[in-house]
Length: 152
Length: 335
Image (cartoon, rainbow over all chains, first blue to last red; front, side, top):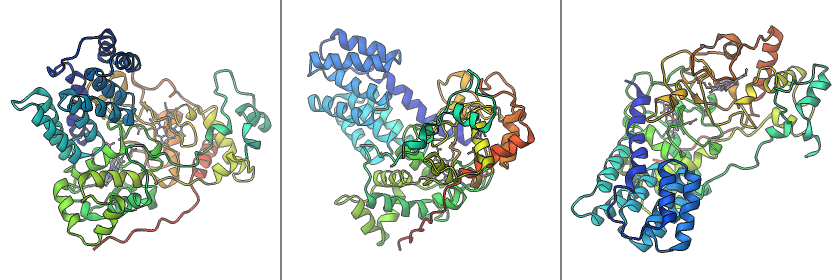
C-alpha cells in the first residue's frame, strides 16, 4: 500500500477542482465588468498576481461585485495570503450570504487549515443555499468526507 | 553584534590561503546564516502560551491513536531530532510507512509540508497522521469525545479556547501552535555567525567553506535553517515519484523531495526520504559520486571529487550544526 499516493489522492482532487468551482456557479447575478473578466482569465491561467490586481480594480470600481470579492479570496489563497482570503470571502458573504462559490471556497480553506468543524458548518450553509443540490455542495461534501478520514 | 558579520566567502577563503572563489561560486556571507529572533505565527492561528501548552500535551498523548498506544512523539522523538531513528517507521497498521519520518524542527518557517510538500499549512497537516489508518488510525470525532471525557483536559482546553467546547478544530490549531515552538535553539555555529571566532574549530570552518563553495550544498541548503524549502531530485535511488507524484505535477519534479533542514543533523540518522543512507559519511559519499543519474537529476548535483580530508571537514561542519542541549520537559498526560 503506497501511503503517499493514498494521501495525495483526496487532497489534490479538491484543490484543483476548486479552481473551476466559480465557473460552475449559477448563483452570480452581477454585471460582467471587464476587470472581473480579466481577473478570471488570469486566475484560470494560474497568473494569480495579475488576477489579484485585476480583481482589486474590479472591487474598487464596483464594491458590491460579489463575484469579484469571492474570486479575490480564492486568488489570495493561491498566493499564500490566507488571512486576506478569509477577509475577502467574508466580504463576499456579507453582500450575499448564500453566494455559493464563496461558501465552497471558504469550506475548502477551512479544511486546508484543519478546521473540520468549521468546514462542516460551512457545508451546512451551502446546503441551505442550494436546496435542490448544486455542484458546489457536492464538491465540498466530498472534500469534508475526505478531510475527516485523513485522506488529505 | 553586526560588527563581524560582513565576512564574504571571498574574505574567508582568502584568509585560509586557498584560491579565491570563481565567478560561478556564490558569494555567501555569514550574515546570510543569521537566525531570526522569533518563530512566526500566522494571523489565523495566533500564538498563545495556553494553546501551545495544550498542543504539547496532545503531541505526547497516545490517546491520539486508535489503540491509545502511539503518540506523535512515537515517530517524532525530541531526543532523536524529532525523528525516530528508523529508516521507515511503523504505525498502527504494523507495516512500514512509505517514507522516512522527517524532523519537525523549525517548521514554523516552512511553506509546504510533507516530503513532497502536498499540504500548504501545518494546521492542515496535523490531523492527517491522526486519522490515517497507517499512522495513528483514530476517528477524529471519536477522539474529541474521548478527550472531552478526560477531566484533566478541561482546564487545558478552557485556557486555550475559552468558552468553546473542545473540537477537532482546536486540536489542529493547538498542535500546529505547539509545532511552531519546536526550534533547534542554536549552538556553536550561530555563535560563530555572531562573531565568536573561537566557537567552532578550523576543520569546521573549512567544512563551511566547502558547503558554500566547492561542494555547492548551499545552493539548496540555504540560510540559517539550511533549506530553500524547494523540491529537488538529488539522485536517491528508488521509484518514489515524490513531488512529481502529485496530481497535475510537472514531470520534471519526479523524484523531487523537499530540501530538509541540516540543523541537528547528527541526531537524525538515517537520512533521506527513504532512510536509505545511514550515516553522514554515506551522505557525503552520495553527493560526491554515488547519486543516481537520471533525466530529472538536479543540475546542481554533479561529481564533486572531494578528497578524504575535505569529506572529513564537511562532516565536521555538519556535526557542529547540533544545537546546545536544552531540556524539553515532558508534559504530564492528563487523567
